[in-house]
Image 1 (cartoon, rainbow, N blue to C red):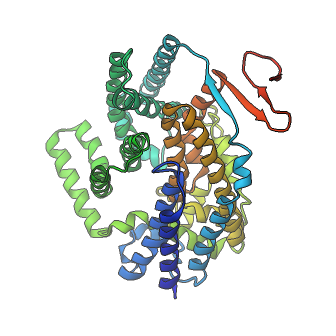
Image 2: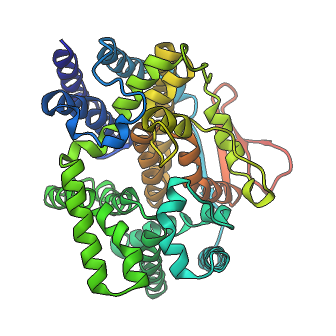
Image 3: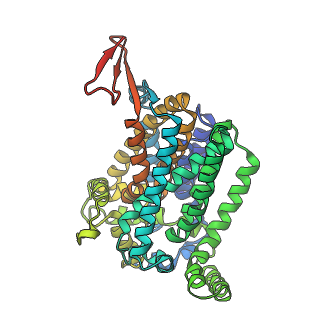
Length: 463
């Protein structure tokens, strides 16, 4: 019976993707459907087919409930239906799509703004590394920081690091897509600089998802701009993604050894880690098992052994943006910490819950249905905004992709704190661009425009 429900859900997702009208060849809804299909269709089916032995043994140290709740597949299926219901609220999307944007900054001013962005980025990077006692120490402790076992002295400055992602994507667009001629050499220099910084941030972030997000970003931005899928590149990226998923963890495990010793010891540590992973979780689906296992756990415990969280994680995520650690203030218990304690039995790493478990911890199955409905509404609102924005500025494809990836990847992660943390500089960038823009919303009833330009202290009507 469970197989049939997951199969029907998989067919429904494929049908939706093949039949829906799309403005972009790849958009945030496609990314949402991809991750939902991966973690809530393919992975549970693989766990039922191969058995739970493919799951990391650490996930079974705590309260392990996979396969014990017959209602889980129904909750997953209905969650997707509520998402579709919210997404098809077209009237909500239409209310936010009727606007125009005009950037009010010269070419020279734009170049100077990018120079300033790099200055901010390098200043944050220097202070962060200095606070950790040097680059070597920062790289060696990267996994401990990522797992939340120890905290960097100036960890708050990592909020600024994703600024390089924006700069990398934008310079890629200017150099390889738009091929801007007037300042092409400057943008080439910017692109090379961002590429070097990307390599450094790979070592400091210690994340396979970080690498995949950037590779996927360059491809998606190119595909949207040319309105083509480039099937050959899609295949290459898919194979590269499998390679990174399989060997990324051993690589990050061995990098500190290379930094501290020599290449031979690095290769030895790398090979030992591969052998260990092949022994404990030889199946690739083990990398995607935590969302469905977390959902089972949350459905079994939420409202029984655990109090409902009532969507408090979204407010906690905003509070987490404040530099609490610098002032000795402890963070609240985020859902990912609670989920880790439930699945691991103790806080030995971080187990992200996935979107459905996040909502389930909030209000059980009802929380899933409410949360997925509003997530669908958000998807509709974003789609209409993206369409209007891209018609006016092709370069907006950079921001469109970054928001789209965050939207889709949230299905896999389900952590508002992580999503807001990673999007901090994206939000700041959007705010800065809005302040440098003239934004107009046509008033249909009066057939006038409401001018919200920063040049005026009050809104004024213009014929």
